[in-house]
Length: 412
Image 1: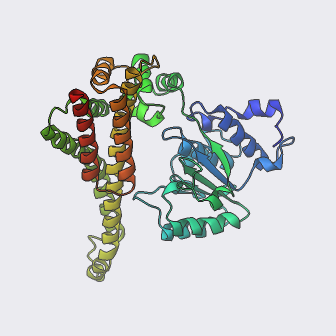
Image 2: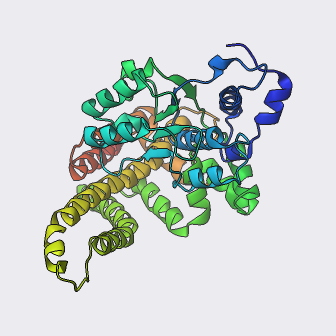
Image 3: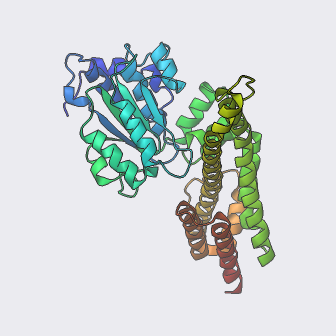
């Protein structure tokens, strides 16, 4: 693809809507070029803009942030000013022509995708495009992928599809959909870049910002939560205490139960208030509390709708619990990565620079082989949970493997 004039890139690369996209200058330039092409700017090749985009990158790199910023810039007459009604409503998830698919359960169903695709084929009501933003395209069922593929193959003139997924691997996005999208690959942001944003934009004190950025393994959202939330910091401390708390088989089951209980408790606290408000709003919309003639009949007829809402909330709670567990497992895998590095004599910076004593103690106990086996056990647990193995079984198997690895090392 030919390059745009330097003056144009200098004018667009720092559009305000892209401010939250940390350490991704290459992606900002490509997206800015596409926005310029969509406006027909002179000197910009029309091929810079296309109707289907796939944003890939590791968790926390900003896939959905990039997609939403791009959606705002495409709708905005000023190419992403950040303060017009288009930019503000896209950021608030309320723009009438930007339809976001954010899976609350384990998958995105074919029914949901068909509804979105049908609506996306309409002409824009207020903006320049109808935009479909799928935040977790790797959760599309086979039927949903097929429904999306047909729309991507034969798009309406003013429809743009923005998909987000961890990678272009067929397990994440089907080959046929991938082949019809332009891929924007995002990188893991550096710790200094994250710390700078936390301090400058979020008002976090520099020391806390540096610490949060250094332990978040490049995950911007995780760093922001650790910097702001004492409860999140305490949960991390409890998770990382596990490797030094396994002295007996009884500890295996006790620590497994505590890890699961913390995940359930956090997921429950995140869901309860939201669920109650949703049910109350739905019942009100369906006429609950009415005293007219048809009030009783309307209430009876709405029972099925309320039940469907409750089913969706239960599915969302399951997804939330698994996301919380996965976050804990990512922290744990980072700890054992540090253990492996230290046991091999590496001088690479620790992912957990605030825990050098614990890392060294576990490294001395496990050695390189034991540390590698521990990393494998944690990663196997993450994969098992993703494949719908019951979390209790997956967690207990992992913790038992961690305990057994330490015991073998002691007896050697």
